[in-house]
Amino acid sequence: MSKRDYYEILGLSKTCAEGEIKTSFRRLAMKYHPDRNPGDAEAELKFKEAKEAYEVLSDSNKRAAYDQFGHAGVNGGMGGGRGPQGGFGDIFEDIFGDIFGGGGRRGGGGTRAYRGSDLQYNLELSLEEAVAGTEVEIRVPSMQTCKTCEGSGARKGTHPQACKTCHGQGQVRIQQGFFAVQQTCPQCHGNGKTISDPCPDCHGQGRVEEQRKLSVRIPMGVDTGDRVRLSGEGEAGINGGPSGDLYVQVFIKEHELFTRDGDNLYSEVPIRFTTATLGGEIEVPSLDGKVTLKIPPETQTGKKFRLRNKGVKSVRSASLGDLICTVVVETPVNLTKRQRELLEELDASMNEGGKRHSPKEYSWLDKAKGFIDDVKHDLFGADKANKE
Image 1 (cartoon, helix red, strand yellow):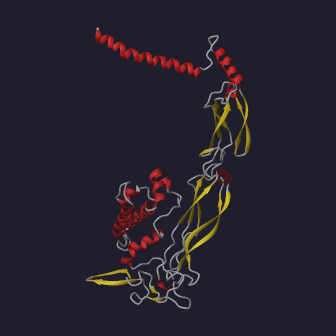
Image 2 (cartoon, helix red, strand yellow):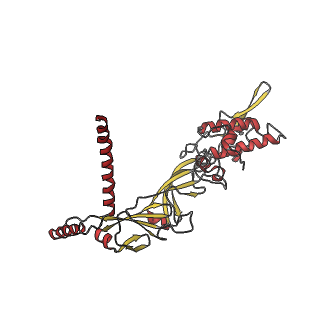
Image 3 (cartoon, one colour):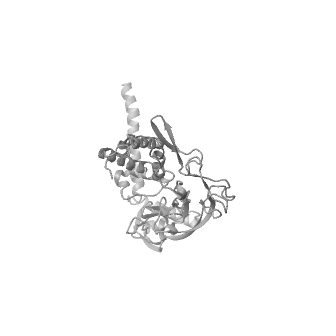
């Protein structure tokens, strides 16, 4: 893999549009293609670099990984996503087919074969399903080979005929002065065949839309944004080309108790003010069941407690995360007359003896008093000085 910057190779900036990538690659490929530069090792190297850069930058997912991580983000064949329709091979044919006589993938009878499109299916899972892993059945609409004509596009009992214009080659040769140029046949549009009696089910396309039921195994620890690739389960190819892939995109539903961040789970736990003051033990839920949480005396609201190995083991981690519980001290409501009297007695007793029982309150009051004094000094002190 080339270590040169892919944008530099194509002569583009990082903010370039998708169309600019293809245009730049066409220009470089036409200039450095080995068929136009026989025996030129430097031209061959530049052609390979341009081809490598195009394969990455023309795929939106690979381009995003390259922009963030550089060459490390696309080493090892980072796959997935929906790249250019039909893949790089078909675009390569599109660029050079008219000049160098095709040479792309061909189906039966010399017709050009195209890879089917990749598909994406959005799958919503509960947090419990994502953490434990599951197997689900999905229904996916896609274009599949017509069973009536077996993909030929012709009515049963008939066959496609070789195109009379290009004689089944899919391309025609046009003489322009000293130059001979080959281009896609305008009659059959590169298929190399014509259908006089099309199949009534697919109308000559060779493919029909179907709803397919597939079983998908979701591994343990997936999270929103993760994808499961089902090879060959995308749309059927054209003229015998290979099928595309299906990417199942995972989305996790919002949970009523937990929020996930990577391997860790977060939860807010309400506690009584008496428990926060005197300390005690409470039971909190986890994905494994109930867990006892010890609350020390004089606990303040917002205090976080970490429960080790009660989080999630993601698909990218070998260890369990933690469950972080944030306690929220609740103010009592619906008090009886006696309860109000007891609280008033408690409040009165806290004001005796000179002890500070609410450290944050007193600290805040001290800061507030200092701020107000400073403001008064700035305002009235300056005014007094001006009068003098």
